[in-house]
Length: 98
Image (tube, helix red, strand yellow):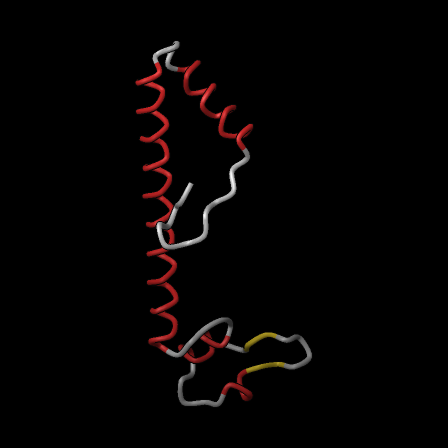
């Protein structure tokens, strides 16, 4: 099985695939075509959900890099952008002072 045609094949043990196929066949009450359509529909829905998660993560990463801010320092920079970060932290408690 290839999730990415140019990527490495995804390892699926035949037994695992057979168990999944049997479950779909049973759910379709013995109708092989309905089982196949249901399995492909579920796979496409899972693929779409994964692609949406990846796109959302990419947007969040881009958003953070575009602003040059990540982590706890972001709060400090927003609160006091004109003061250096070392002046805004308390080394004893390890937190930013906002």
